[in-house]
Image (cartoon, rainbow, N blue to C red):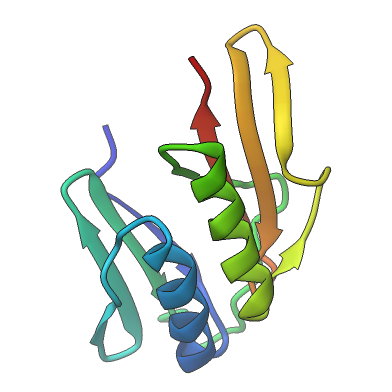
Length: 125
């Protein structure tokens, strides 16, 4: 359904350092840089961070969350720890199991250095 997800940043170098560390926990190689954007390309899609083309400041989406799939709760914890160690801020509840209509899932939430809300999600069997 999706070809890519792109979010904004006000500091491309800081965003690259943050997401390189964060996404390495999921086995994603460091970003490629293209002028005012960085790209993480995988078999399942592309995640990108860009300075706004209109020259105005980047702002986080109110109510928006981008979720990254994890293979285990340990991988989600490593993702969360890498994010906090590289300028992210833990948000929502602490990482852990949540139960709902979709069954048991393990979630870990962060705000990136620009305030975007991101999540690591592991669907438990």
